[in-house]
Image 1 (cartoon, rainbow, N blue to C red):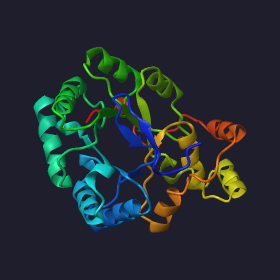
Image 2: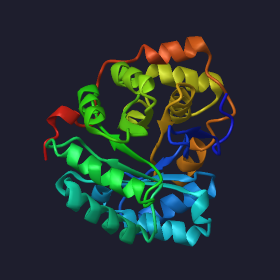
Image 3: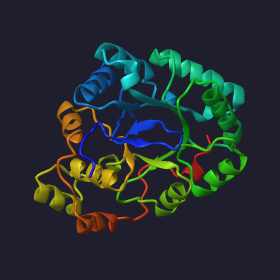
Length: 276
């Protein structure tokens, strides 16, 4: 049983990533990002997930600097946006992200979406960054099985992570099974269903039973499935509560009940339809 926010998952290249990280999707750049990330770091998070398109990398970087936590204790992820895909443009995008973050390297760099089929070329750029020691690990986000199959057929280095929309209403068993087979770790964005599952009756019943919040039940479900989860919040009390999802365990029957909530229902975009 995972018992601490400091526990990690080992990626196939030997790099360790905290299983519970902090996401900043839709967090406004400036004080909102700075204060949210500083609070997350204060309560024990060490993994922060951002992206160029979130336009808050500067705030993340400022929070890291103000926290005083040594860089080597942190795990920082960013992503190359669709309009920057391509070999040279990806290399430039990486440098731009580093500059905004005020960092010398990233722990994980991802292709944000498969997009308009430039991802093979983009992946070659990520492989270059990895070989040069500029980034500790490389991966993808929002890749379906057919995207992964095409990438693996053309890649020299396979991705360590596939970050996908994943929650009890969209459990994505086919992608999870494919990733497990190829030793690609699954990372869940929108792990709380972007708030849609907070009032779900089964989740709330379990929350009352365990004297936990609905968010803590959802996080625990991800952790026990071995998924890397990156919940987001700008509310200090919720940031702190989400970090305390380690002192209880869901039974097999309770896990099965949550698994049964799947409706293949997306709250984000379908990767096959994101062509921008």
